[in-house]
Length: 48
Length: 372
Image 1 (spheres, chains in turn red, yellow):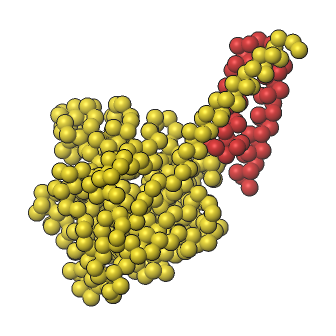
Image 2: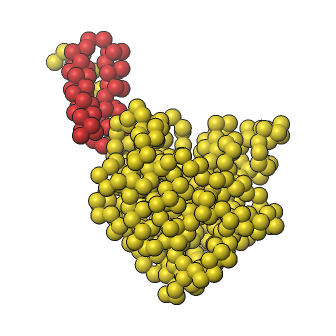
Image 3: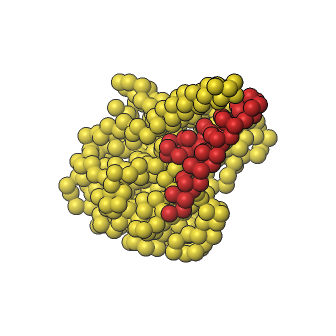
């Protein structure tokens, strides 16, 4: 149960970061946001 | 479309590419290692045979049975309890591929914590695999993590309450198989594996069992045999044999109040004589330098040599290092001596294993000589 709660939180954070990536106008901040997405994707897909 | 949207889409495409490349690399660790059953293997089953809930999960493991057909003792050998301790599981691979049993029965699980073989420990810079040249080809084996893959039971608790003792341990130890015995059927992934091993010991009526490990060269329990009280006489007898061959081993008693460990729980909860053996593995140490495949196989590290020169090591460490072949040789010789001592103590329970390479032989000829 705790595991799936964690995955749901990861999905929510992923959506928020993705939304921020498209709202952000500074390209340096956009790069930082894109970097944050990588571990979230790998964790949500149960790869790493 | 505005400029920052174009950048966002471009970055998203890069994220997809990076995730694909990294994902392929990580998923490669889920491909099982090739272990070729030798002439002594009479049957191969899965750990899930003993606890069905493991079937179809990354925690199921192959169990190789070498049955002589002649009545005698049953010995169990576990390798890969900690998948970042390669001498443990390579010793089990040599037994699976090379030996035959003339009396009694040998059960070998080379990669018991199979989930731990699907990842490496974070922040250690460990290689994902290492290679050994066998007689016929270059064999590759995974170098895993100390515990089960966190993806199977994440998140770790802040404090791990060991079942059933209630002993408090660091949260990440929840994924450590050697803190999880006797396990439970409805517990964490790691506790279920421990439960399956306990059922195997019970169902197969195992008489003597070995859990093969390695540890950092600077920790006190290396080149050691850890024994439960009931196995101490046989262990002491084995030590005399080993000392007479100039192989130094420390004899450590299993602490009665340290729960979850194989040598404690197997011994307390079953008739089995349990032994845990440790060799010295530089890649696990804090003093190590370059951390790569070569360090796994050759075990040569300049900083450990310097530490030995100033007298900071309790084992001999020279420029030849601690090669994998030597560490596997120590495990094999220790195991053989303990089996001999067990037979002396229990003459009615014979177990005769043939084809175990001698220590000097495996050191001189290399590990690959004993692999298919």
